[in-house]
Length: 279
Image (cartoon, rainbow, N blue to C red; front, side, top):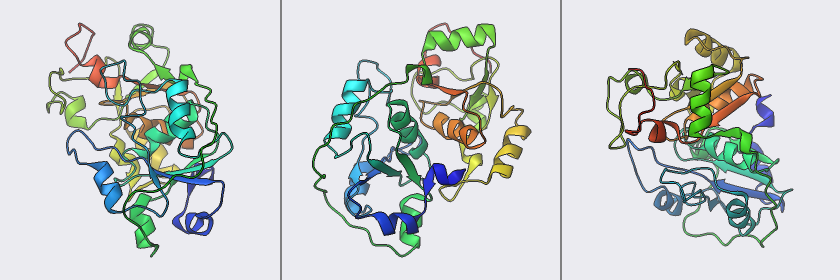
C-alpha cells in the first residue's frame, strides 16, 4: 500500500531525468520554530526541484495560514511549474514529514492524481549518497493543469460545528498533548487554550520516524492506544491544518478513505469567537 503514496530515494534517482517527473520542495516551517524554508531550499535541494510555497499558493481571502487554494489559483501556480494533469509530481520536505502530507492532500484535493512523497525527504536522499544542488531552478516548459477541487475534503468552521453538535464523525487533533490539554500556550498569539469538544488526541509526531510513516501495525496500535477507530468516518485538525494532514494520511494508509480535514483548525476555532472548547 505504501508504494501507492511514496517513492524511495533510489527510485527517484533513477527517474529524476524523466520528462514526466516534476520534483517539488514543499517545506513549511512550524510556528514553534519558524525558519526560512525558501532560503534552505536555495542553499540545498534535490537537482531540478522547484519550491512550492504552501503559504503563497493558498486562499489569501481568509486571514489564516496556508488555506486550501481555489481551483484557478492552484491551476495557474502549478501550470507554470511544468505540471499538467498527467505529470508525476514528487514532493518532499526538509522537516520529517511535517509538511509533505499537507501538500499531498492539497494536490489530491485539487485533482492531481499523480502525486507521491519522497520517503525520508531530502535527508534520506542525502543519506543514500545522492547529489544536491543550490540556487534557483529554471522550470520545465509550462503545461496546462485543469484543477478539479474536491470541496468535501476541506471542512469549514460551520461544518465543523455541525459535527461537534451532531457527532457524525470522530475528531482527531494532531497537536502535542500539552496544547490539546490546555497545559501549554498556543504558539500563535491571541488563541485560547484547549481543544474542540469531543476530540481525541493523536500527536502527529508519534506516527512518523526519520521522515517516514511507521509501519501499518505500529500506526494501528498508536491509534488504538489513543481511542481512535481507524475505520470510522473521521475529521482531522491541528494548529493550522498542516499536521492534521499527517494524521489524515496515516488513516488513508490504513485503508480509511472517509477522512476529511478541518482547514481552519485551531488557528480559527481557538480565536475569541464564542465557539465551544474543552480544556
